[in-house]
Image (cartoon, rainbow, N blue to C red; front, side, top):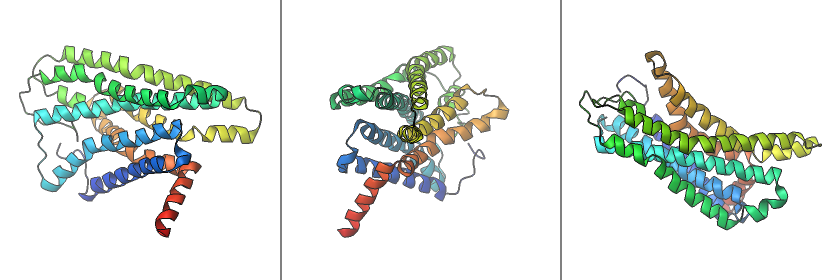
Length: 292
């Protein structure tokens, strides 16, 4: 929407390049370094893959619009962008809950960790959460595709999000909104509650560790994930639960930038800067590169 944001033409390019490069680097490190062949880093590699897809759904279209001046998008393309973006958001909810459960087992049930979180279960969880994420929005996306849009078809946003699209329809959208609410409740509330419950148990277990060193070591294994969870759910809740009044509409756009653009940019930085094993794997990779 003209005037909603002020971007230089280089800003999205730089954010996209750093996001993709950083997340691909983490994927390469997880694949190449034997020390990172654990469930925790297997899930982290999937998160980096998801974040790369996530930001690729939004920023290339923004960059094309800034470069060419053409900010139009077809109805089919807009609904497709909403479907992919919504599916990836649902997948991330599932993945973050699985990662929190992994940390719960590692800290609260360490003797059972290796037996429970084996390679087969990890693979099944990852396949299930990707399939579940793309199924979670299918029904109401189909319902949106049946709506009639009768202009002026100007989206008051920088990408095709649910609320801006619904506002453009000249047919009754009540059933679509109900379907969206039910779908969101079924597919995002349980993962959120599982994540919260896992961290309640994790924090209570850490606080019972007698030594300060032990508490610090235990907390360091889950602090990066806790930061990522807080940023993702905090901005997501602000966008979709804050009232859509005119005074708060621009604020919602700002939070949309956070969870849609800046969160994928920050996640790999958080994991790489706060995680000793990732930094050590990066150091070894750079050493091998320079020796080569």
